[in-house]
Amino acid sequence: MGTSTRRTNKRINDILKKNHINSNGEGINKIISEALFPKSGKSRLKNSIINSTCTNSFIKTFKNIINASQSLNADSNYDFNIANFTSLSKIEQVESVADSLCFDEDPIIKQTVMNILMNENSPIEYFKNTYEILKDLLAEYYTEQFEKILFEELASNTIDMDDEECMKKIKSQVTEELNKTFTYSDYQIIIEKEEDESFLKKILRNKGNIILRGLKI
Image (tube, rainbow, N blue to C red; front, side, top):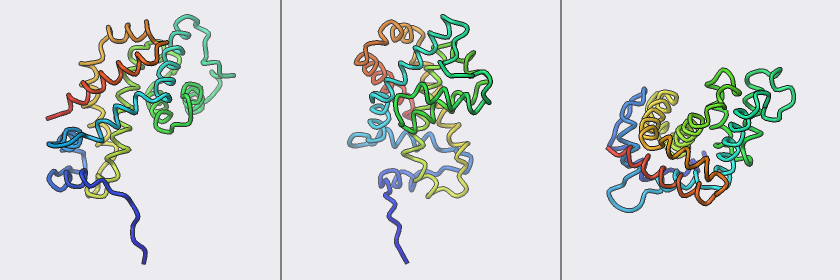
């Protein structure tokens, strides 16, 4: 009989022993707060999430989204340079756009782009509002990062946990803080300096720190 080789996150497990979460995700805010802001030492979770938005993969995709949105606003016939785009099914359009925008094969970035596109009726109409797209991208990406780091431990320690409900609650908290922090003025500065990748990394790091700080309770 073999033994499990699954690596566990001891600190997350310790947090879960002290805090309860029900099947609908109630209590997830307390767990996130303690995971992000330990009483002593640095938070690997917080640093991991913030650093993930400063990778070349994320920055390149971030820029590609801005450029695609600007192209759509400049040319009503723009179709992401995808052949026969309008004749594709919804899922084919979503997959094709994600493939064209994502810098490399980073699965979390690609899944994030697909998730935000699947919530919209028309990728073309959606991409005309660059500010909203960037906010949606960040909210979804932070949520995906939380899922990657927390959910295996949560599933192992919570009876009948509803992944979807937990994700909704996490995303709702992140979106609330992001709406307070990522202003239209920030967006305008990003558009003006979007070719400066070092600047993009700096502003995303700064905003990430503020957004995650808002999740502390």
